[in-house]
Image 1 (cartoon, rainbow, N blue to C red):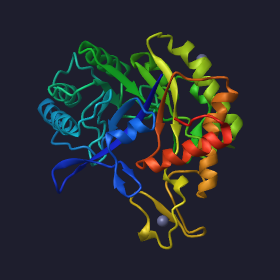
Image 2 (image 1 turned 30 degrees about the horizontal axis):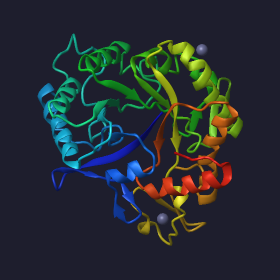
Image 3 (image 1 turned 90 degrees about the horizontal axis):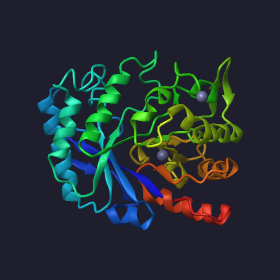
Image 4 (image 1 turned 90 degrees about the vertical axis):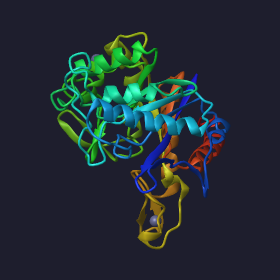
Length: 344
Ligand SMILES: [Zn+2]
Ligand SMILES: [Zn+2]
């Protein structure tokens, strides 16, 4: 049973170094904060790449940039099994390199350089890489910027080093999420095409974020609790059959953020970084579909309820909880109190 936590980092251009974004309220978090809360593994990431250093587009740039991050991670003394991101985007929002031809046909790849650079540093308990491009449309007709051959090649390359490849695909976009009728269609769901090239896939239900859900012929339905259960059932029962690789562990991402903290705020500039102020309720919110903290907590607990209603106890889970461990502490307490089980 492994619980994967996301460790958010970013490149500080002024200081020319990486920095951890993780906090416990007002103080900086340490590795102990992950362990004390029951997490077994960490995924070091910046998002989809926009917040990692990017020195250029060649293999050598990738090598140096990957090595730079790995050297910084080494100094953090993380004594936990960990995965390191492969940053998809540059800070300006363009891809770091092409993702259509595979490494074997185009050896001068930034991404290949990144992997080699990371692995040139002897990071303790390094388990593998995190493919940071979240879109589940990739490799399909609506995501042709990435090819199946590229992902297949990435998987082979990483495995050649004895490392794993993991992915946390999103299922939504714009103002709504996609339901099971889209997830069953390879034209709208690249997870079906490439899922077998990952050791772990944690599908994002995106119920915490989205009020609306699109089904084929029925756009803009309310994203109800029943729809969450349906999606989780699909991940548990249907997706493994479609992917058909016994070596791929398939699970979901648990989702919550700092909206649950209910931070009181009187004007927008007073919000913590990355949050916004809802001036009607004087509360800071992040990405939750509703802004009251009690509602946000309830949406997050719905994932635990839905797993129970789907009759599924996943052996592995990934947790998105933004950058503050107080979020986990609140959920842990509420989950014990309301559902008599741990959140993590
Ligand atoms: Zn199917
Ligand atoms: Zn605020």
